[in-house]
Image 1 (cartoon, chains in turn purple, green):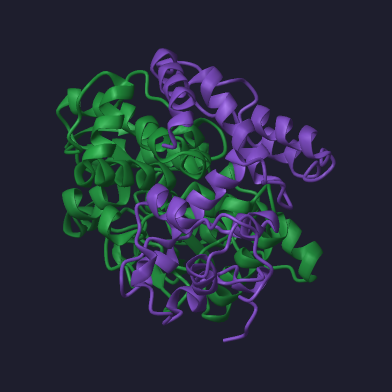
Image 2 (cartoon, each protein chain N blue to C red):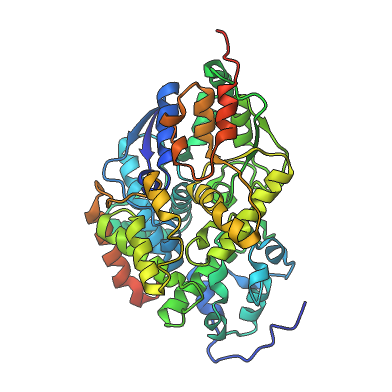
Length: 189
Length: 294
């Protein structure tokens, strides 16, 4: 293994917060690296999965969240499915993402947090996802309106993307779910 | 065969072809799908990246609605299937989660509603023998690569779909439709779909790798059961050409579209006109098929 794990550390290790949020025990990892071998984005990131676990064990703090490292994940869960110790590494990444957003440290390439907000905002409004609006809000926010413009006319014409917003959903229930989630945010859940 | 049907948001947008072909195939096979009234978004990947309780509650709201109908819940979108299965799993295995969801939704739910993907209904409830009897135009000679992606098979303990590394449900259905399965090792690889809009280049490269492998193994089409995979592999082929300088011309169709053709349903009832990559090779196999005499 390379020694990229020896990096400048910021104070306040993330290990315990991640273990609590993801409900996983990272001490079970014995660095077999099956997760890293199966990871489809291992080539895109400075630390593959097993190395992220090692960095957390060695006290990694906010520097893990500042580089956009965790945001390349595809949630394919190959790491988790193949882990001999059933460590849910996909949940570790989700926890790191959630902590990054809470700490205001999430400014990754591609701005996935903005996409997630844009998507969930349409769910909040309509009870169901409204792709066209979510994509428009995201692209406005990232200044990438031009990208994919070659595809939208054909997709709209073929009916492969809805023009009108969704209807018929039980919006009251969804509204309650989002209100509750906002209220619980302060409790660390 | 009566089920509580959860279409998922994509059924009316990016995966209308999936929804239409599912409806047509259900009708032909006597499967009764009762749409869950007022169903809401499962939260998809954006919710679980944000907050686990939010994700489980969004999926849980539909599970509660299905439980009140007293039928198995059938889902056609692999992503919604995954979120619903994971919610059930977490609600069953974590008292904290069970309490959090009950607190949010104002109702207790024990995680017991069976959630099943539509292809499981086709294989296990209808069955290959009954399917074969209904095949009108077997797609003889069409070489298909069955592609599962991630959401159906992972995490295995929650989805419990099939062998997580070598599933065969799609292959058995493709065979029932008279088509030929190619042997390939890419069927549970990731298409990169989650970064489709955020880091498009990752998706383009992952999806191109999947298509290249299928093509190298002799596939004329890729057969999917997930709208995220379908969009990545189909719509992004134009970007693969730009980025990698290769044109693949690989049709990416839903299992229900393939099966519908073999059942003798017309292509326009199966959403074939909505695909971005021309499915000519698939339609040709149906057109040239020798109808079975009964």
